[in-house]
Length: 123
Image 1 (cartoon, rainbow, N blue to C red):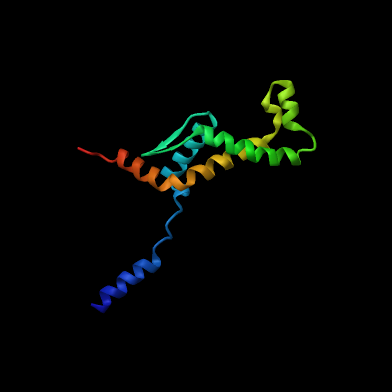
Image 2: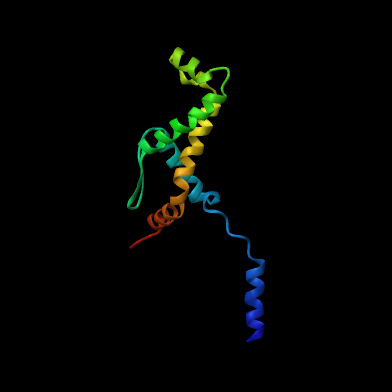
């Protein structure tokens, strides 16, 4: 009996650490798709929970105020004046991804479970 327990303990000790959900293939894919969805202005549904695009853009707007306060070159204002957000700089795109990811992360485990279930053969 002790040998069996020792073997189980050894297997446990030698096992690779489990990847965080956002580093798994399914987790990465869901997170990227969902970030893109929010940035496009669409809601993301995870079972009974809906992450609203409106909440995303509201949070982004609040956080971008901080970014604008640090922008002594007025990149965003110049972009608005020119009618082209391409000139705003990458800081705003990075911020959008950061805000979206922070809103989505509490739901990643549920999303992974649901996606795995859909990918399984349910005959």
